[in-house]
Length: 278
Image (cartoon, rainbow, N blue to C red; front, top):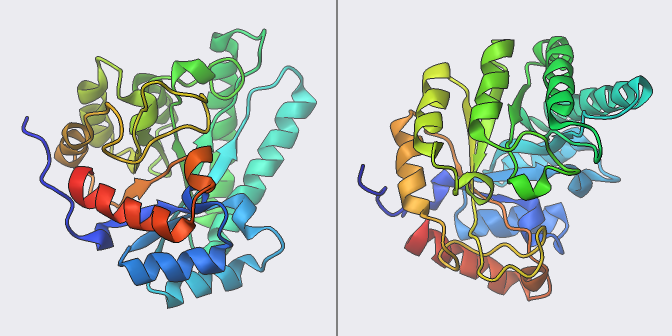
């Protein structure tokens, strides 16, 4: 399959508030809208101390679609009490998404050092199923995001799109899907097949872009803008679009380097990276 055509229309693009973390959400919304972006994904810490519903109205007044709320998850735990607290926290995240006007919560599913990945995956699947009645009541979906295997110790036992698809298929609800983040899955030899499967399942809820730097100085906070690394971005987007995805291309970049810069300059770089490489 040929690579996707350049994404010339920024109305199809979305920026995560974490990408410009130094800006408060009010500033981020105004700047994203002025640059021509069509969407915003809100990280929960950006809502701290704010009226969530009023913030959602503000975002829409800027003409921005609220694409997702990040993040829920961290279900895996060694005690029943910890798992119960995690489920309660995810119900709160679903309620925040409903108040904000976000259609889904993205899940970073969790893992526990010393607990088997098999056990953690079972706990995650059970927890998402237990969360589903609350999602149905709120009319808010959840997107299981597989994370790169380097995070399998303490951030997520869901490390391939196949595992995420298996969970979504097992639960069998249109409110439970997957999020494809190129940073985490670009290396997977089964990626094209599993993206197509996500499409057949109707589970493809989100598509996140950034790039993998070589060398990587920090395994969490040293991602690159699109075009700065080695990920075949347009090839992966072509697979996602062939699978039927018509949502926003979401720019999600964790970067100490970029957070230390002038954020107006960073946003300008994001615009150019989308036009040239996304």
